[in-house]
Length: 128
Image (cartoon, rainbow, N blue to C red):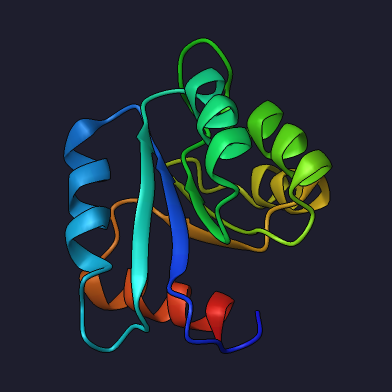
């Protein structure tokens, strides 16, 4: 992503409201550039709808969700938002799952549970 004066827009996708709120709180960290959260989605269907409306630059994506799982959602987002950086944040930790997500369009993988520092480092790597 090119540095600009425009804040980075971010969509947070996770079926856990606790995780969505934690990520939202952490992106306000002064170590990160300005990030505007353009949506919080509890499943892939809502995420696709919000992404079409808001065109986020950055997405955090859970894999295990109702209605549309993360892999299907990543594929859909990569289709119409090819420049969006997608960070998978999932309790599924096997290499095959991570590789499948990356092949479908994800750019990084963070295993749950994660520390605040791990999330910040992962986000900085994607937007840096």
